[in-house]
Image (cartoon, rainbow, N blue to C red; front, side, top):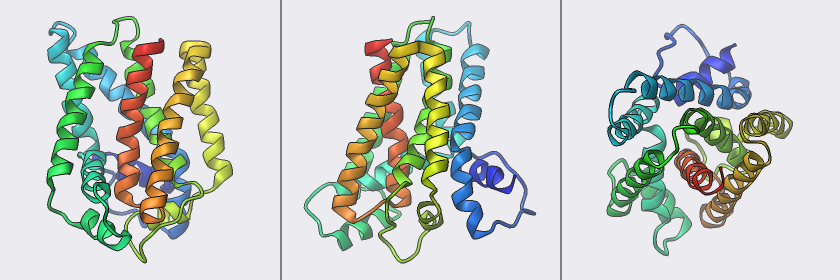
Length: 243
């Protein structure tokens, strides 16, 4: 259960107490629980949507964006901003990693956040009422698993860092098993159309993963966070086109 609580602590702001002592192996094992944490986050988003059922769709969509930032502490958006700051331009690997570690946000990172929030808001506001709960539930499940997929087979390009134990502790069989469970959820919700949304989202994540590995030699905590946002954006876009 320590691996579950580690995943919960890492991906959300839900307090779990300070008595738990995590071991190195717990980091890799926690990846199998990432989709479960995504399901918890999805339930929270559905609760917010239901709680404000009397509010206009645009306002509810804005509340969903705010709620998604609150439940994660803005962790993944911060990763996306740092990633865009670092990967934009023709920098060396060392300079790119140095830029990504800088705590100050740059112009590209700021623009990435603005574009992300605007697009998410528009996508969510465009979801038909018949699909909204399924999509709000399934979106974070897939995006959290996509983070583990990005870690699988990747290297950590720095000597040390917060995400190093996650990347190095990834077990392919467990990631594959978790991915199958996510795919089953999509088939349950949308049959073959769900499979198509799943695969197209995964394709976008795979393209970004290959680019990051070529640019910096692996996956960092920032690029893993960026994967979550890319997966959510892709899932919302393809869901609107296909479902």
